[in-house]
Image 1 (cartoon, rainbow, N blue to C red):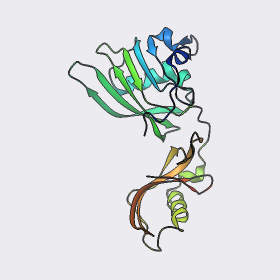
Image 2: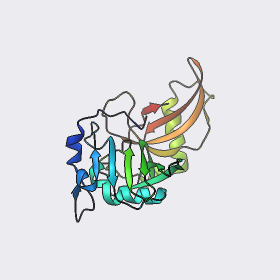
Image 3: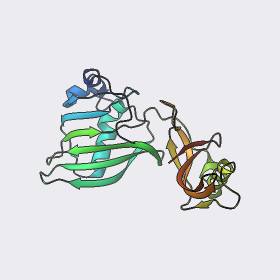
Image 4: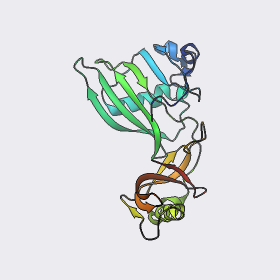
Length: 219
């Protein structure tokens, strides 16, 4: 789940974290936030208060995160955001759901919802982002057939011969290994697959490590 996975610590510590533009850093408290509990990564799990900004659409929310809050979340220089949704409630408050990307690759469970006031000020940021991402994408990983071959090899022990079917083309993703608390994220091949296993028909989203070829997560 993108929200609520981290272990929250006191909000007072979080308010002392520096953010703002690099040439004029300010604490989260100085930016206008009054609540900032931290996840296990020591990055914000939730921000609330009022930070003056000009957020009127998803691109504005993404730019605000990158230009003013990136240091607090320890975002890599290759970070960008994709806008997943943009809704407005009856009071005129806007809710913008963003997915983190690293060098253009989606970061699984790296999502936030930015709540913006009618005048563009940021009222809240809910969700976790993956900090300190540092890796390059091998050229071979971008080839169309590389991902499907890696997934076929990874599933060979569990998928009965000839039953594996891809429901979409394999793509790259950044994901944390399943069932490994606080394990670092890895670059993976991701696809929705169907196959017959020991328990019958399986339909799952699978993530296979680009580096090791091992299955990192199955959903």
